[in-house]
Length: 334
Ligand SMILES: [Zn+2]
Image (cartoon, rainbow, N blue to C red):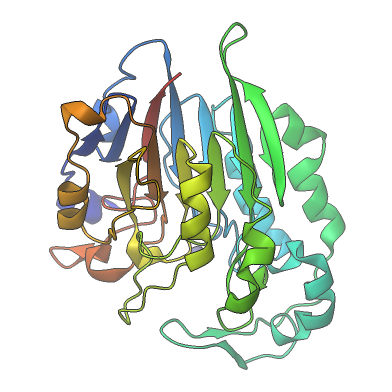
């Protein structure tokens, strides 16, 4: 960020609280409150970084919900992975998104020339047309090495593609489970897209875990596009009532960035409100004493790409990961 931007940027601290989860959506990076106590775990959530780098607060675990790159090129992965290797978190759990074309290997082998061969051809529809980049077929081998090789292992990187992983942050502490799925509903035929009619094939495979990473949002939760379409997956929404993870992190719809702590009514688990705006979050998220023992899911759309009405303040364009689009810090009671 340059000095003019720095002078104009200001932070409006925004946090959500519940007995078992705290969420910091916007904060002064120099004054981020610590975890409530030592028996809590700090998860730092990002998504849709698209080969951009920015400041990320320290925490126990970094979660990234996909779109590591712009079109899955080796040079873009290099930029993202060098950044992630250098971050201090003990575990960095990451997935792909629809832009990480090369990681959807079978699909890329057939489709690559729509993206990486012809110059000037529009390959994606509005609101953000994307043009094929004049570059050669990308080699998956160095990309795999960056995600799963020794350097990645040493840096705590865990790349999940329809897989589960279990880990302990503290030696004597609790074990956490996480599942990662790069898929999202059909959108101009990008990588890891499924037809809505075939959603159940993908979604029914997702197991019960503490943390769920998907690239696409569930229907009705931070999934509204600039065209006023709720683009999330209905099947995923229905499945979440069964899974009830502690965190469900996603991205994909950049303009939908936000967080909401949902308390599951044990007598009516299917009852999830529609939440797209700050107002809807505060209406839906009011905890009562009777709800103290209910299970909770923190829903987070952590897209770091400034989009929608919040992309600028006072006429100043926000940088990636800047105010309104910072990494979302989620503290969970162990
Ligand atoms: Zn994205």
